[in-house]
Image (tube, rainbow, N blue to C red; front, side, top):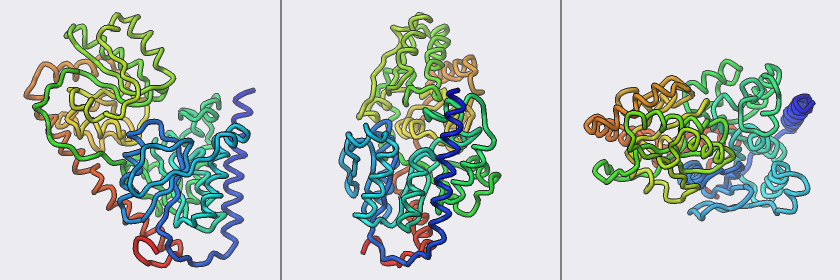
Length: 411
């Protein structure tokens, strides 16, 4: 019964978004003068995710980034928050509250474009607000094709995760919504090809998240062997990290691992560690704001996700010298060159994970070579300056196509 209700709700939501977008296109839109503002909405699960995605937008020359979110994050130059009141979220739900606030803030500030992270609900909200107020809409497919594959059944979305079975119809419906966007941003070539297979072509740009520059510090004391950084959610399969630590401990009983992040699978990880007898080998650090400092003390970054875009956590780890051992999924191979700056392993193959990690821990020269190469790759591909330039080009193009007068960063 729950899966039927979820199916009906999702189909209705997508259909309503398409109806609004279609009706709005009938109305002849006027050219507008640039205000130098962009309105962004989404859910930021940790401070680093927020910094990674918002800082290059704030520095790309658009002017001001206004973020509609559940709560404000740390201050950043060129960024301000417009958060709906808590009572509204309690009455109409968080998603609807953010949509309402997106429209209200849009009427007040007249942004040049609307942007949403993930297709549901933020991407759909950005499209609705953009069409209602006559501005371009942008969608960031941060999680990769899994956001719509099979109707999104494998995503972390509470509703779509209850579908019960994959739906080709909902997948096609989601692709139609994405096709209405004025700009779609993906993390790599695989996601772009996936969308092309669904008929979404000319509006797609490849732009990753950013990492803050850091000095090459392979000589600092690295007293932690393995690190897991990210949201402790089912899609990340964090219990598998515990399995990897236990497998490495068979060869290196002194191995140490840290878990940075929080989420619904935290207790399951602790239980798994107790079951495998490695509780004393693991340290749970929770959400941290000093992530760079933690990563600079770690030797190997392990990711166990069943699906990814281009992981910002991985890019951050590489930028700070931690060598990645990650599954060969999504867009991770856009940054990891197997055997050069890290290792791509068969997904869910704990034995292969352990073998790669152990080889790096046993061979300091191998680790040093991979660490230097990892830092170089992350800086060249994901620095704030590089990503800001890509955003500047993409946004300028979409604004010109949307009918904005070209007046520079702001008017």
